[in-house]
Image (cartoon, rainbow, N blue to C red; front, side, top):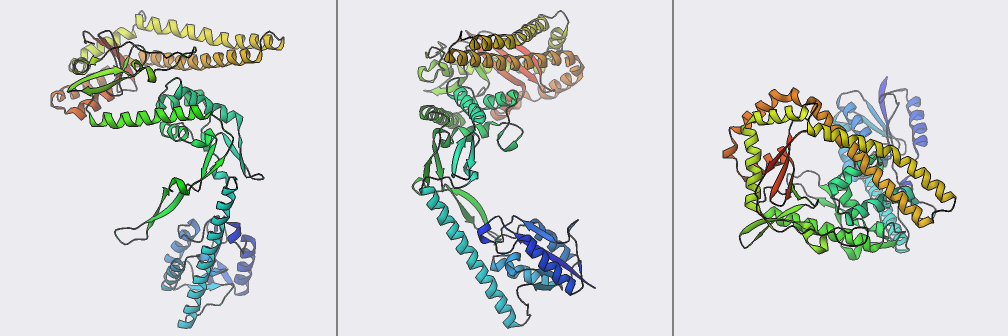
Length: 527
């Protein structure tokens, strides 16, 4: 009995398909029964099936399993409905044919008889060339139709709908998903008005349990950046934006394909419902560009505390060098970059320039002294862990207040709703009050988690005494020999945050054992 493998394929392009899976399966099994073939199964299936895969690429799972079965000698006949089911690329089709025949496997098709003679091979190649030509024509017509559709102001496909929208196939347009749109408005507001960093913005959404686009598990800064730059949210969707570009391989392998952006004049703009106002979107672009430029400038200079130090006002302090002098300054001291309060006024900071060398030296000396004297760290952990510790008492007291306030918020919301029903509050006041309560609840929930985490850390701190001493001993031996990049990496490993206020520097260090924290203070840094 002859062992035969059946191969079936349909692509996602309905215009390119003449043979459905059911028709292929019926014809192939009928031919196998007529010729008394024994079917070689693919797992639980009687045939090797690629559903939803293009015939222009050999990178298909069922084809890969089929080729492996041929190499292992499990197949004597490969039965397929038509040559273009195997491949619509002539070169790939000839490659598969040669590979199958070299393994001693006979290739059979329903739609044509195979012939091993030169004439038969020539006819087979001609059929493959015609199939490849048809595929190219179908693709060209499809692209032309989509471009015409886009020029008419319609949305080409559901792939163009970002988070906050859904695609309406009947009208070829985007429709706002209000629940998701509220999240989009929230993070645009937080980024432009509250000056929240991308990392903290993503962390806030994760803490609130907001579902990520396309079912992802966590929001990330890179995703937030892409979404903030997406002009669709301001009412303009750009179509025909990307194209495939083949990249030649230096070793002569098959060229790879990368996606590149087309020139702006080749792209097609379509008006869609805006989720955020244009001025808010442009404000987000200005801040993204400022941060990008700042990152480029800072990358050219050596700032040991870059990303770690902030002023007591809450603003981040950035390094800068002017005429050979290095200093740190609070970004809120710049009137145009200060966050706006509820009255529309900029919250500026009066912090002056701080001597950068002295600030860096104070932080470095404090951290290295801790590492050279592990007993100090252990004593600090013991002090913080005592039941009567001022730190523990303060954390527990604040946690109790936070929990009490969280219990009160739902009652206030119910009172507001009741007052609104009785006509005591107009619509705008109700919305503002509910928004404020929502913000307060989110902030308190976040603080509650932080406090509970810090108290849990104190409970376990003493169990890490031996590890702390060992770590400090290992690091302490080579501190003096570290270069700038190694010092910076060490500080970013050990230091959570540095706060500057009127010549006093407070350092929150992270002991790299599940986030244990210590606090140290360096005095006398000049402003």
